[in-house]
Length: 327
Image 1 (cartoon, rainbow, N blue to C red):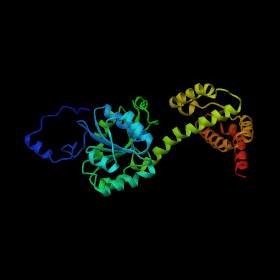
Image 2 (tube, helix red, strand yellow):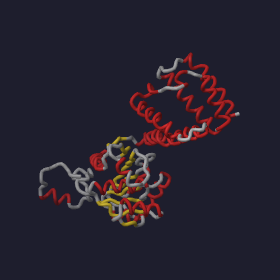
Image 3 (tube, rainbow, N blue to C red):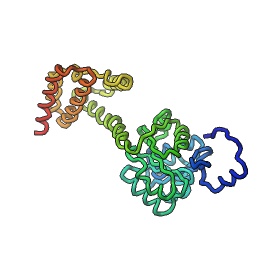
Image 4 (cartoon, rainbow, N blue to C red):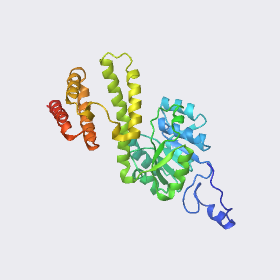
């Protein structure tokens, strides 16, 4: 990415800049005004794809780490010219930006270990891709003089080259020091995305929302597909696909006004029949149906879609079935 044109620095300014870390400007605001030297610790589904995207934007991905056969194959596809070396070696050569893309529960120990080995340096940006964590987990890196950055792409990844097309226009949940914001803005622009600034205290809530919407959607859809198969539908994806796509589109546009179905109408008898049949054919689905039906009723009432008086029989059915489920 190219920086906006600026007046040519004076000789004294050039001498002052000579001792600064790569990418740092005179206001101590790191700016990717030239190709960055980048390393990736954890070249899994997320790390390898982000690395390939940054390479496509002209940055230098000098090293990555990963030991599994899947990781080696992924690097061969997405970053064939990038050396696969241990994590500490990646950190040493990633002079501008170190991306740490490891599972949430492994992040703290890995960052602490890198800091203890002395491979992190002042001015180097150390970014993790966890949605659940903010800057606290990068405290050891910050203590070593590195600049901490939480950079979470709000997208699901398979680790295949096709993922690169999905990055266009996505949001990145970003938590960063104020001085790093210009760097982040330009970096995310290079990835084809938009930064969504998330406060440190809101990081867990931000991630919970994404997990609730995306991960639980996978479970919900698979449950629905299974129940259609139980009902004898040969191609449940053909039946469900158009309905779900329309429901998602309507919900994103209209919010709670997109709600349809028996709960929104207060059809207690229909819901009771659903629960009775599920109890016989798929008892494991009953608790999730009950929980979602109750939450749907609450939202329908709050949105004015279902009158409280009309909801009473429905809520009674849900309460009775919940008592049975826990008995």
